[in-house]
Image (cartoon, rainbow, N blue to C red; front, side, top):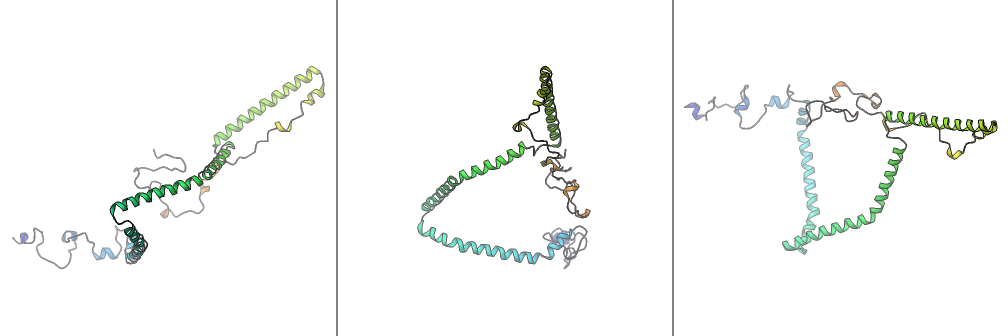
Amino acid sequence: PRALRAGGAADAKPRWTLPEKDYHKYTYQPSIPDKHFNVGHWNYAPITMWLRARRPTMERVLGDVWSTLKYTSKAVSAPVVATVEVNLPGFGYKVLGALGALIGYNLFVMYVTSRTEAFMFLEKLRLYSVGDELVNKGFFMSDAEEADTRAEAFEHTTERLNALWETALADATQAKSFDRLCSHLEVDPSQVADLPKSMSWRFSMMPYGREDPDAKTFGFAPSDTPGSSNTPLLDMGSTGDYIDRQDNK
C-alpha cells in the first residue's frame, strides 16, 4: 500500500536530495548534478565546460543582438506598413500592390540586364580566351602528356631535317656542285621554329596535396592534426583525398 501511495516508485520515502545511484530516476526532467555541471568529467569534452562558463555572456550578447535587430526592423518596416495601410486599404489592393511590386522588380532586372549583358558577354569571352591560350600553351598538360609532346616534336623535327639533308645532297650530287649544297642552307626566318624551352611551367607542377611536403608551410602538433577520415555524414571508411585525386574506394 505504501508503494502504491507513492505512485508505484520503488522508494516511497520522500527526500530532499537526489541519491547518488540512479539519480535520473528521481527527477521529473533531464538534469545533471552540480558536481557534473560545474567541474570536469571523464565523459565531457573541455569545450563543453568552456561553453558552460561563458553561457551567461553569450546569452546576453545574443539577446542584445536579437533585440537590436527586432527593434531596428520594426523602425524600418513601420513607415512602410503605415504607407501600405493608407494607400492599399483592402486585401485586394494589397494583392495588386504585391503583384505590381513583382512586375516592377522584373522590369528593373530586365533593364539592368539589357544594359550589362554586352559587358558580361565580353568578360566571358575574355576569360575564355585566357583559358584557351593556357590550354594551347600546354599549361594543363600532365607530366606524361608533356613528355609525349616533347618526344613527338623531336621525331617530327628529326624527320624534317633528314628529309632536307637528303634533298640537298641529291640535288648537289646531281649538279656536282658544292655551292648547290650550300644554297640549301639558306633559311627563311619566317619558317624557323623557336627552340623548345628546357622547362615549361604547368598546372601539375604546383605543389598541392595533403602529403606533399612542398605544400606545407608550418606543421601542426599530432594532437591538433585531424585524421584523414574525420569527415562527418559520409561513409564510415576513409574519405579519400580530393586534392591528391585519391578515391576512398
